Amino acid sequence: MRILFYTGKGGVGKTSVASATALQCARLGYKTIVLSTDAAHSLGDSLGVELLAEPIQVLPNLWAQEINALHELEANWGDVQRYVSDLLAWQGVESIAQGELSIVPGTEELFSLLQIKRHHDEGFFDIIVVDAAPTGETLRLLSLPEVTRWWIGRIMPFARGALKVLRPVAKRFTDMPIAADEVLNSAEQAVDALTEVRGLLTNQEICSARIVINLERMVIREAQRSLTYLSLFGYAVDAVIVNRILPADVDGHFAQWRTMQQEYGQQIHQTFAPLPILRVPHFPREVVGTSLLERMGQLLFESRDPSEFFYRGPMQRVERTEEGFDLIVPLPFASEDDIHLAQKADELMVSVGWHRHRIVLPQSLARLRADDAYFDSDELHIVFTQPADTKGTNKR
Ligand SMILES: Nc1ncnc2c1ncn2[C@@H]1O[C@H](COP(=O)(O)OP(=O)(O)OP(=O)(O)O)[C@@H](O)[C@H]1O
Ligand SMILES: [Mg+2]
Image 1 (cartoon, rainbow, N blue to C red):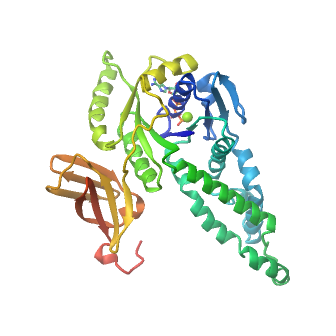
Image 2 (cartoon, rainbow, N blue to C red):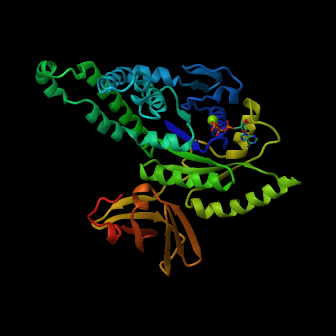
Image 3 (spheres, protein in one colour):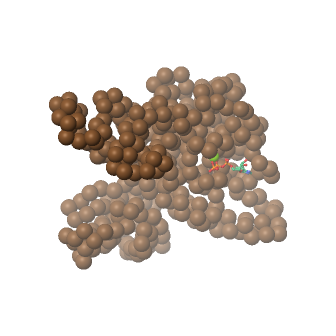
């Protein structure tokens, strides 16, 4: 079983590329499902088929599903949400706000991801292609199970054991709503299920994340940011897909666009190394319907199997050290001589000889200072420490 998880900035072509991938997989004989977890679905429009919240078969070997986020939320989190609403009401929060506040932003999509676990557990499909919501949202969601556990610890005022003893007593001394057993149960079940989904998505033998980009500055920057966060949270990225590459014969102001694309096109190898770059041209029209998507899939993968691992190897990661953290970046083509670091807010420019590598830092490192770097078996270790003036204080 393989899970192919497509992410990227809004509008870059995630849905199209995910559909194209699924069609290609189906054509190769894999039982494939493409599902969209983005609450604003466009998967059906892309395939030119009316989709439902349950999988429907679109072509031989190909199924598609537009997950109903609200339904998933209610089914998995409804009890908890109602309890939190009561708790907020007890604390004097006005009723309209309760509904809004009782949901951690992004929770809806989070529960949509449970459908991935369902298909995995049922074992009917060989390949699950996920068309995820735009980057920022998804990444936050993916890191959530730990956060949710922590959050549940805060909103459920007593642990289960204590609750049995304390509930009758607590009832006499306070009118604060106390979570019922069912609420605790359903919270625990939900978090367990999410932890399993996370386990699937971080299982490097099963899941590959692929970042879709266009050759534009802001899109590339956001992709770098997601690469950092995906790596940080343990998700394996195996390719970057460049969509909408303009053909050589454009003129007028599209010729300028093309020149710009060529410039970015040359930089992205270094930017995303060691990941392979797959390319899709700009089509002369919207890529809608199975025949155009099939064409897109052929151009994208050529003769390759989309379920291959396009890259397997070490990714950027962060390790705790005595003084702070090491950011470890695989740079197999760089050498020991003359490493130079320049840090500005959340960006770090690493120059090693002629090679320049720009890294977007996760928030936790952007607060620290990069003050040393060394190579250890083809990996660059960048040493981050607390700046002296903030040591031992809680300034930030
Ligand atoms: N290579 C391409 N050539 C021409 N049109 C394209 C190409 N890729 C995507 N499109 C068109 O661009 C539009 C947006 O694509 P798509 O819906 O796949 O993007 P998305 O990243 O999923 O967007 P969202 O973030 O809104 O979900 C669609 O109309 C699609 O047909
Ligand atoms: Mg989309």
